[in-house]
Image (cartoon, rainbow, N blue to C red):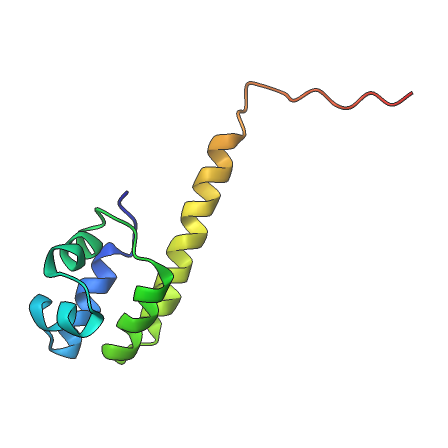
Length: 93
């Protein structure tokens, strides 16, 4: 699942001066997983986003991460509602 923040993780890491190997070691994850996070291939768990913001010393990364989660939630909510199908209202007697 690609998201609008996938590049924000990479930019934040690079601004902090870490290579992927260095950052992955500090995050206690393998470099491949970090690469997947940075390309949007898999979603970054909240706990990892918090660690990233602490290690990279970039609090704005958390804001971007949370905004992405909010956007994804709205997309999922919109998919649940179909404009063509109207749900029947409950009949009360």
